[in-house]
Length: 252
Image 1: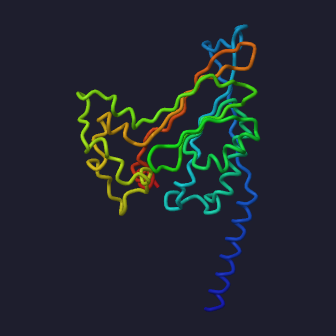
Image 2 (image 1 turned 90 degrees about the vertical axis):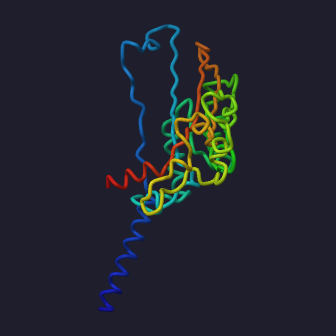
Image 3 (image 1 turned 180 degrees about the vertical axis):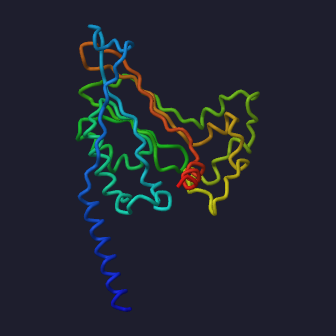
């Protein structure tokens, strides 16, 4: 019996070691741009037409990576070292003129410098309160020149909502200020549903805005013969993770 248990332990150990080795040599599947054909695409035939490439990518902040939320992902794949190398490899392979990244929480320590080495300048805005992530807009400085930028903090927009649409009392305007670091939190325990009263009325504009979300808008002049101005916007709207994960668990 003891020999059988020992043999099983050795097999499990070897299996884990093999899995880790496979993950360390993991090569990501690179997505590709697909050409869009149609009668309404004029820029390819018009002399004054212009082209540029843009990718919007929610890269999942490392602060939100929890094995309990990703039970089907191998543990090594959730580690920052492997994730960061993989994300950078995918971005490099895409080589877009513009990248709109959401949930960026390692901007100064990783993304800013590494993307600069790839030829990108960047604009970054961290979310309000005690949130760790934010939105990053990266652009190739040999393809576009930054003309104007504006950073938007949705919390500030609550004040602009007419009184007739919402009651601007403490119950509404301070909904997400009690536990600001748990806004993107784990699913409700024991499969219990979230209390909608705790989060306020989702039809209330103030409730929807007061989520510590941010946005970036920027105008660029393309560095080609057209010198066209393009406006790029990047934002990440509030999303309660518990609702979706409960649905996924029921489906599986």
